[in-house]
Length: 245
Image: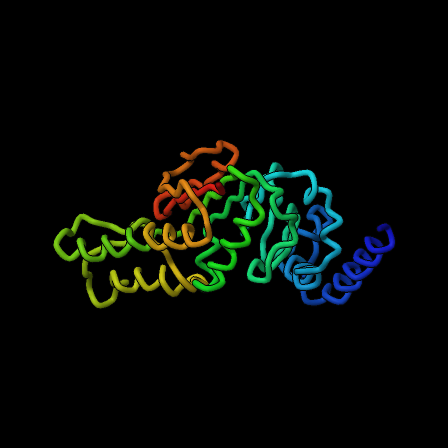
């Protein structure tokens, strides 16, 4: 085990050394792992690598945070496609997850599933089902496509309506962002591949065998350990929970 860890450290030091010239001026007061270029390089090196399976968090923790980004919680196994300090697993979820089946009490994922295709999301939900113990809970948070579409339609007759981040939901002058541009930013922007409403997620979850599927709200749900929703995203989010029989 030590030999594997030493090899990983040597690889990291090599990459850091090769990259110093492109990073710019370094500060002695700032950890090198805080630099975005170092995080990207390290992520590219270890993403999907089995050396990460040596992490004791994978064996000792019963909650998984998928696509955690900067919302890192030490109570969870923190998994993300990109690496940053605090990430336990740098992994592509469309390739499955290296966690033992029937080993988790809860899975949380916030603004992640919309970044993969519909078919990949179906496979990922199937994997979530396998990872959870009986009575385990899955909490999904995604942008609410229905919310945006409803505001787009209603905005044509109500100039007081605004989208979640303040953009007017009615037509403006030719020099301003139109409501359709706002809708497109949710459907096609930010690396999104498929966005959801409650009906679609309910159908997908039921197809994988989940039960007790329910629409929830910000920081409200059946397992308090999973209520780690980001305040910043509350205005536009759809919250859905489901359980394994």
